[in-house]
Image (cartoon, rainbow, N blue to C red; front, side):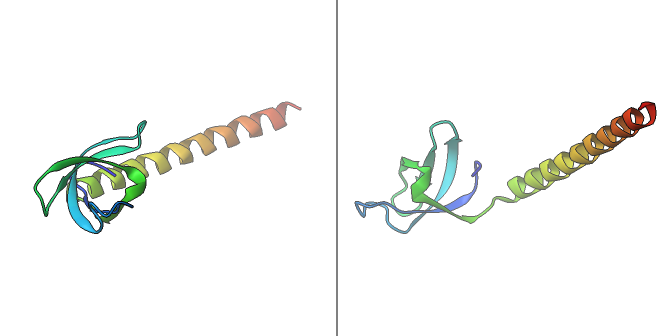
Amino acid sequence: MNTGDLVRCRSIDGKHYGDIGVILEYQPWEKVATVHIQKTGTKERIAARDIELVKRAPHNVTKLKKEAVEKSQKNILEDLAKNQLESRICKKS
């Protein structure tokens, strides 16, 4: 979850069951998001377990795609370096 994502809020007490909101801030170490609730216009802190992602914000989609490409390129380069190292060690033996 990132800032700007559209979410559906669920809670056991029924206070925000099924309400739609936008994430204003997400703290991954607390697993708590600050959400602007559309129905009431209030800003609430809700546990991540009670939030369901409805739609990613467009800027988050491009950011996540870019991170995935960078991560895959890094993995490819690490694999190449490991294979080269293994082949050098095998040749010396």
